[in-house]
Image (cartoon, rainbow, N blue to C red; front, side, top):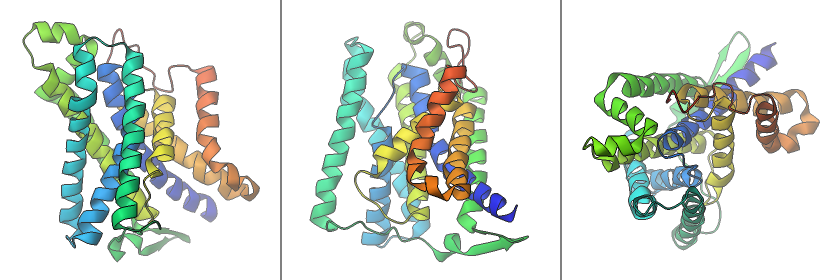
Length: 302
């Protein structure tokens, strides 16, 4: 039981990272019906920005992370304005947006591969973090790091904040209206670009936060780290019910639990742990195609 609870904490910690990134997928999909496959690489950009600010420029950890999150949000906005907005204004089909997202993903990976080789060397870099997060804590025979306990709590607090934003603020009302019928919102004289910009900023900021936490828990970075993590976060969003913020968090927790606990009990399956996320995705979609908290998009948003 002690081993089980230890693996449970580790699973929820990893699942919280997937959940933070999955929220961004859900928000963008809910508004634009777009699977932003560049989202995982925006997470990678956030990690590199944090590495540059903290490791290379010597900023304090707190101020460095705060600036990293803001800059990552700005990267999301720039992605929207430079790539998606022109296509949306021309009424391009969804497949064009999807191909553009994949192109942005490859562009960011190649760009930061060049940056990493020029400035940091070809070897993977360690992401330095305060020892406070890596300090071990033992409770009733269960040993875990402080970060493993902090991350799930932080994710739940962020979930509460996002739900409050969506249902209790004017910005949230605008986002939900935009998700329901973008053309009607435009006819009412509302600047839809500002609302979409807000969605990309929030989603990218959370992706950057998830990336920084991931690099803290697994302290090595590389330009392609966002590909697999991003796909798993997307699987978490679909498992939970893409379009549901709460579902994205639940899907992330489930995915992290499956990825950590199953190899923990069946060591010989450890080499297949990356496949568990997609096996779970297929299994869930076979029985509930809309996901655990799937939404009827004709009646409800988020």
